[in-house]
Length: 224
Image 1 (cartoon, rainbow, N blue to C red):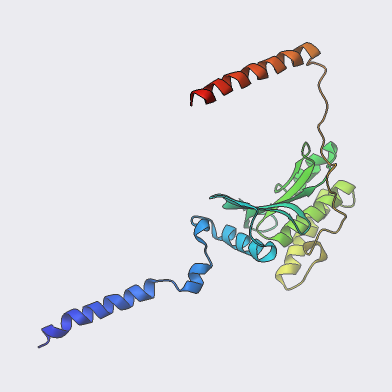
Image 2: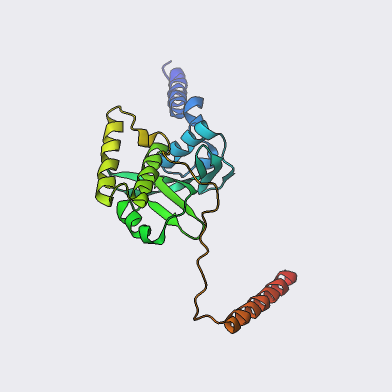
């Protein structure tokens, strides 16, 4: 008689384990299908930006991008994280940028201030890369102070650490809430200037070279 109950008991046990192993709909919803393989920090940053600014303008398997949201010209959350120990160990996953004309002589100061603050002089942009928007506000605000001469590198780095400490302990530092200066809207690019070593004749040769390359490319495309 006992044999009659062995199979049902096993089936019930297996079913219970299977049900327990299936994540709830609420949990599954926290990780969209298009974020499989993303780091946890990246997932958190992307979900926070979606909540703050809506769906991204562009997305792929490796990044999501928002354009012209809040004070930012561009926000990019990357699937891959990068270790960064300043001002405390964390990972950089979210890059946010604005139009900003950084004088060439200030680029080295920016690099010493924070390796995750990057100036693109040609495009006329400055960006900060961290894991939270507040930290990017802080980094860009301090970068502005360094560029304007309001703080030296050490003072800016100490201010950064103190602000993060304040935030961790429940405070809301102003530098982490928004950009504290008027943000430019275009007209910040720097195309630089030609070098006299390159002559007019050289430029004509380069133009012809590009034209030949274009013709060859069109021929290859025609074959396909």
